[in-house]
Amino acid sequence: MMKILMLGWELPPHNSGGLGVACLNMARALSRQGAEIDFVVPYEAKHPEVNFMHILPATHLDPIYRYGNGAYETMHLLDKIIPTENHELISLRDVQESYCEFVDKYLKEYKPEVVHAHDWLTYEAGILAKKNYGIPLVAHVHATEFDRAGMHTGNPLIHEIEYEGLMLADKIIAVSESTKRIIHEKYHIPLNKIDVIYNSLDENYENSDYHFKDQTYGFLLKQKQEGCTIVSTVGRFTVQKGLQNLMRAAALAISKNPKLIFVFAGDGEERNELIELAADLGISKNVIFTGFIRGKKLRDIYSISDIFVMSSVSEPFGLTALEAAHHGDALILTKQSGVSEVIWSAMTYDFWDTQKLADEILSIAENPALKESLQSNIKNEYHKISWNEVAKKCLKVYNKIVKHKDY
Image 1 (spheres, one colour):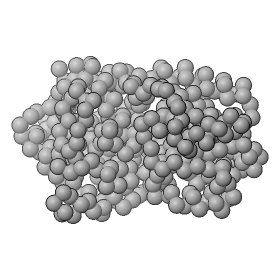
Image 2: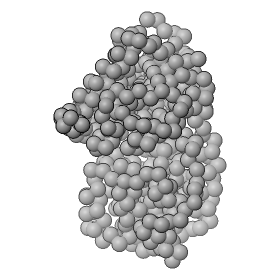
Image 3: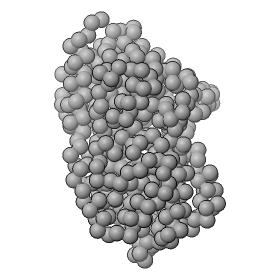
Image 4: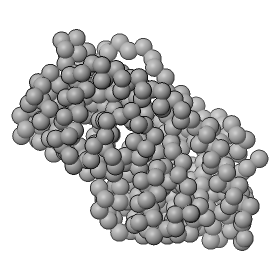
């Protein structure tokens, strides 16, 4: 039985985005393959549905996302001050230090065969495990600082942490070929050190009954019945997501077809700018902002939508596209998204090309046969991706580095 110490920053239901969802499903699939997993998180909370691994709290803090410290909100993240139960003020760097101290104490007593660290927030703890205890390290890259900063350098300290983690890792797992390319080109890591393992759809993600009791969704349902097409996007409102370009494309499309309704589901630093942009473009009556949503409300958005757009400047993978496909949406993806490497029956465009995006939205909205074809073909494609295959590929990576361990 392979013993794995997995280092992460969030797990559902205490997650701010897709990273925690991916970690949970990966760990569940690995446990089915016989792996024994201890999973460290930087907070203390209950995970009532997790019975296949041990979740270890590195601190007594509440889940980090409650303080606005999502795994990807990094521009001002390191200086973020967190109030504790004792009214003390600590920074995220303090949390990371406590996280490393916990891992150090853990490794004095337990000896896993592999340490699997997810993203930059846990790389320092992974480096500690390798340097001080000689345990092989896998660095999993769900996003780089270049992705989060819209392909700019971003935070120099985070850049430095990523670089050291990637350099010292025995093996790197990237969530797409585009992420592998960024790691190689920006951090100068040899290509043969990087394996690509795509994410899959949450295996517990199932359709449920949709009654649209929420007033906003009831309005959308009524608009659909009157012949409107619903176009949605889901995610953090950050520069990485390219939402200002989407808003401009929406204005171009609405000028040709006023029966288009755009739903922006999520929240983030660009929220006010997007609201102002919609007003400046004169399309506010065609744009709905839901705020941050999860669970059934999120599934309802997918279910009522006709078209889902992923407008990211750089998206390492993009689980929301698979979720939307599961609910029958036609997909439009930027060529800069990793999910476009495994979903071929989607329309694609370059993130900056607002005219092409507007044309693709109009084509699907005004051509029922095209929309039906895209929806049908996409469902056939995403069903081929499974977390069981992800787990098998991860185990191959583990076995290879354990076999060649030379410490």
